[in-house]
Image 1 (cartoon, rainbow over the protein chains, first blue to last red):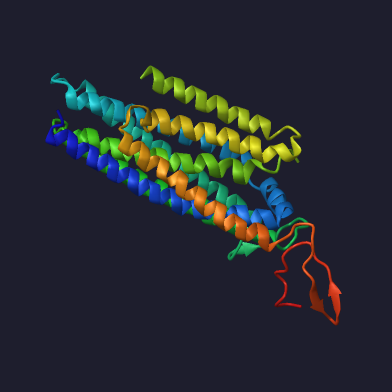
Image 2: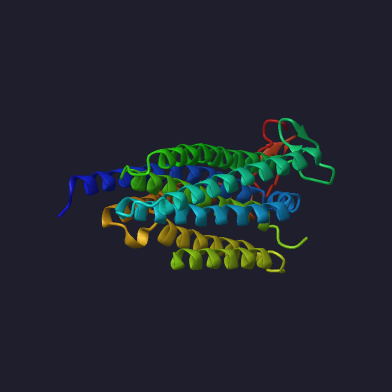
Length: 214
Length: 112
C-alpha cells in the first residue's frame, strides 16, 4: 500500500534526481569542452597538469570523500529518527552532529581550494588576472588554465550552495526533530551533496593526474 | 552503517590507487586508468551513498537517462570534432602564396 506520505517522498526524490540529471548534462558539457580542447592540444594539457598543486588537491579529495561519508551517515540517522518512537535526543543529536561535520568538511574543501588558487596566482597562472608562466609554455596553455578555473570554480560554487543548504537543514532538525519530513529533506540534500562529490571525483584525475610523473 | 563505512574505505583505497598510478610511467594508459578508477568511485557513490541500490525503477531510470543523453551528446559532438580535424593529415592553407601543411586545425587563420 502506498500512503500519501510515501508517495510525496518518492516525488521529492524523483524531482531531485531529474534536477541532478540536468546538472549532469551541464557538467557533461564542461567535460566535453575538456575532451575537445585536449584533443587539439594534448601537450599543453599534460604540461598544465604538472603545474597544478596536486598534493593539496589530493588531500582535498580525501576531505570531500569523508564529507560524503558523514552526509550518508546523517541521512541514515535521519531516516531512523523519523521512524523511531524513541523520545530520547540521541538520534537527533547524531543527525545534527554528522550534518555539522559535513558542512565543516565542505568549508575545509573551499578554504583549501582558495589557498590553491592563491598559489596558482603567485605562479602567475590565472588567465585574465595574472597569466605569465615562469616556464617555457605553448600559448595554448592558457586554454588548460581557463578550463581548470571554470570547472573548479563552478564546482566550488555548487559546494558553497551545498554548505548553506546543510546549515539550513541542521537548524531545522535541531529545532523541530519530531517533524517527519526531515528524513526526505535530508535525503535529497544528501543526493545533491554526493552529486557534487562525483563531479570532483572526475575533475581531480582529469586535471591533476593526467600528466603522469614529471 | 557498516556498508557505508566499508564503501568509504573502498573510496579511500581507490583514491590512493589513482594517485599511486599517476606516479608510474603508464604512457598512453595514464588517462584510461584515471578515468576507470573515477568511474568505479562514482559508481560506489551512486550505488551505496545515493542509494540506487534500494531505489525504485523510476529513480534508476532518471539516473540512467543522463548517461544515455551524455552518450548521444558526446557521440554526435565527437563526430564533429573528430572529423573536422585529421590528426596527422593536412589542412592546406594558402598563406603567403604557398601551401603550408599543418597537423592541427588552424586556429591562427585570423592572425596570418
